[in-house]
Image (cartoon, rainbow, N blue to C red; front, side, top):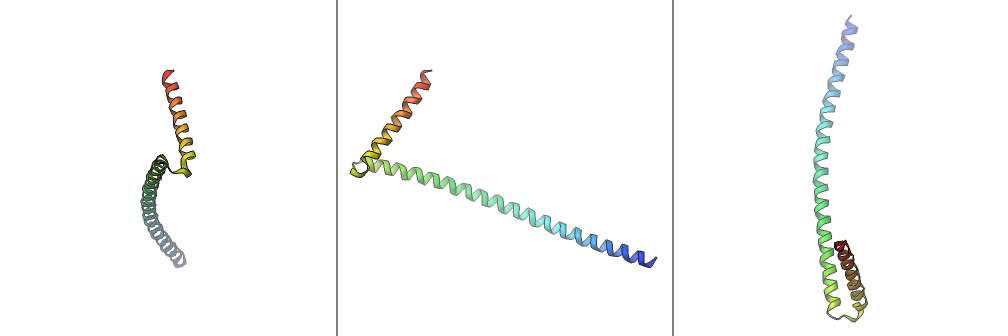
Length: 96
């Protein structure tokens, strides 16, 4: 009978340790999820900033081409033609 009590005590001890480990892992998991959310938010903000800077760069580039840079006149003409085509599409959709 004492052997059975020892086995039960041993099992209780092991279960207790496993429950404790499970609780610790749950806390770690929660903390890691929070860190992941923060990193995702930072990444999103950086992507938005990157898009904003790219738009500013493209605007500046276009402004420089409009000022008469000989190397970029062809690029400016292509951009203007693209903008005109986009406007034509918008006008056609509005006409429908």
